[in-house]
Length: 67
Image 1 (cartoon, rainbow, N blue to C red):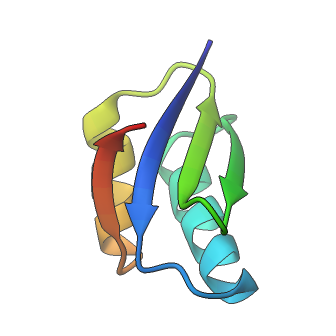
Image 2 (cartoon, rainbow, N blue to C red):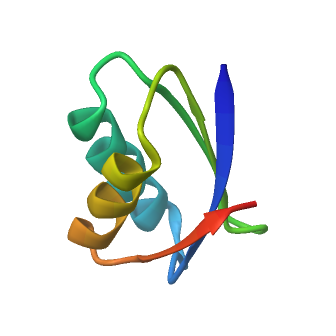
């Protein structure tokens, strides 16, 4: 199962790594794919949306909900 979310504020590969690492810490074992150009983050695995939102916010980015 995978879910795709919108994340704003990412401008570089460092941002991609920060978002990826934050989500992987919040949801151990989750696969994370970040598309910098579209601002979409796809998370594979069983993850609660609120966990993703909190991880993104804690990393300093804005969670925009489901894409």
